Amino acid sequence: MQQSIRLDDKTALVTGASSGLGWRFARVLAEAGARVALAARSTDKLDELKREIERAGGKACAVRMDVSDVASVRAAVAAAESALGGIDILVNNSGVSKQQRAIEVEEEDYDYVTDTNCKGAFFVAQAVGRSMIARKCAGRIINIASVAGLRVLAQLSTYCMSKAAVIQMTKVLAHEWGRCSINVNAICPGYIETGINRDFWQTEGGKKVISMLPRRRVGQPEDLDGLVLLLACEQSNFINGAVIAADDGLAAG
Image 1 (cartoon, rainbow, N blue to C red):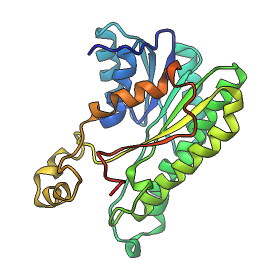
Image 2 (cartoon, helix red, strand yellow):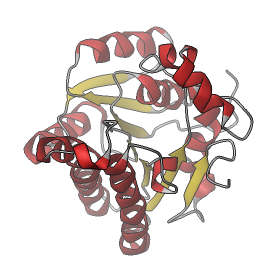
Image 3 (cartoon, rainbow, N blue to C red):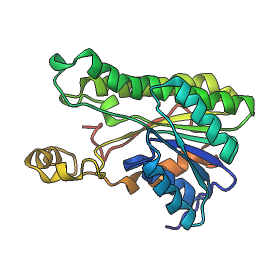
Image 4 (cartoon, rainbow, N blue to C red):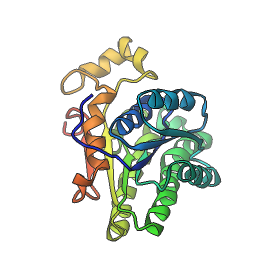
């Protein structure tokens, strides 16, 4: 993959890096020259990704992070910085969902989604933001929200609410931290095919969803490469507080 954007001498932290979009984001940042700290609840798959990055000539470390546990977040950020240096770029990617009708949501279902998607995203950003401010770093924070934060998706009430919160959090942090030379932006992906949902798109239900999409297709993880690189690099200095839909036109419908 040829890239004009380079991130040499930068350190990036990617949460939820053990699969799906997080795995892809980490690889793309590493290919652009960044040192990448890989974070997830389980480090087994992270070790595999670390070896993949190192075989390609990059540098990476794996850190265990449970984003719903603030102590775990702070310890993981410290471990990442100890291994690779101060974090310049955060891809705040960890997220979960649970499909059910609003009338069926129990307290534990609500907590499962919001503890990761809202509480977790905030305290990861806070931990990295504190470090950036202390180091007077011109940092980049990229929050991975969702098209679900921009429009209603059926039977995903708590997920939609949580991603709308991430969008508002992005704007608040951009406002507060812009004067510290920290740019905070959000990407709102639409339907992206990953290993977790690949089989679904072959089912009747999946085909029905595709038939209702603007261009009758789902995206691939690499469709987000350019946007992540742009928001991570110095050339995006004037982009702050932006909420960018990468959804093939779904939110516009």
